[in-house]
Amino acid sequence: MYICVCKGVTDNAIREAVHKGADRMRDLKATLGVSEQCGVCACHAKEVLEQALMQRTMVQYQSS
Image (cartoon, rainbow, N blue to C red; front, side, top):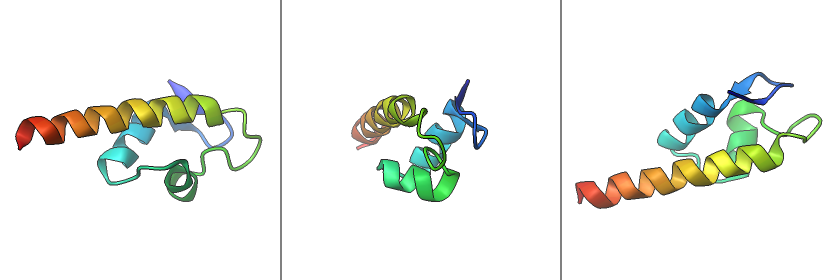
């Protein structure tokens, strides 16, 4: 699903960025351009970011 229409960023792209180490909205803005133009996507991007971070934490916890 598209999260940022201005930059064409999907929820999968955000999850992939988190997998590669992004952990703040600032990181998503720098790597993907999320919320760089109109900003309408910011709240949805933050939701996806938080979900992906939680999932990443759970995977790390289970593998240790």
